[in-house]
Figure 1 (spheres, one colour):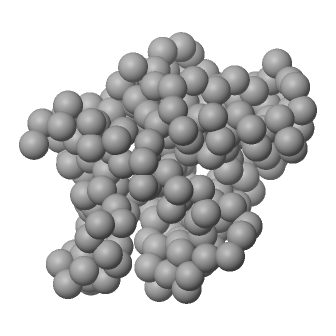
Figure 2: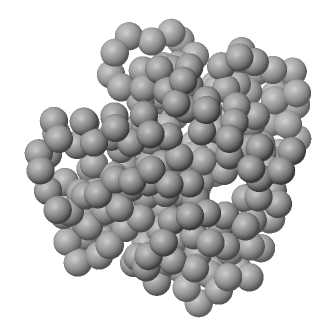
Figure 3: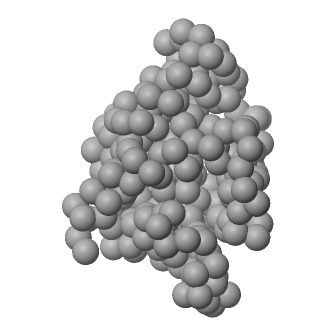
Length: 227
């Protein structure tokens, strides 16, 4: 499949059945055991990034939250004073993010949302963040997307991805990584060495790393700054 096919699949999924599923997962309503586990894992990843940024003077920096989903990271960053641009490939996700932002922080010129995929975002930001998006794209497409995101980052880029290890590859193969073939798009794992290599080729060096691991959610988080 080419990049267009993958993007089309992701967009259609998150504007249909995927939107309803992930809106529940990212919310606080009742969900099943697997969804609750994924919700917990995703929130741990968001909390890790927020903890990394808490020592920043957030009111003085701009942040691009690429693939922002329903605003789980964008909204608390804006609440902390950062200027945030959130983008997502799904129109429904962006509308949900806008609705949540309006309910939680009201009208603010510090937070803007737009419907865009990773490759069409433009602008320059102090920090570019992309959480739990690369799993939808194979390595060659992920490399291109990471390079584009890096080109917009003046100081720092933070990425999370499902790491390609023997254990996780086996889980994915037997269907336990994302239970239910009809419930998710393709799930691509990425080798950490490949992600680090593309960051370094774009002039970034990894400064911090973390791992979120629950029963059904696995996410490697890297923070890299310009050399």
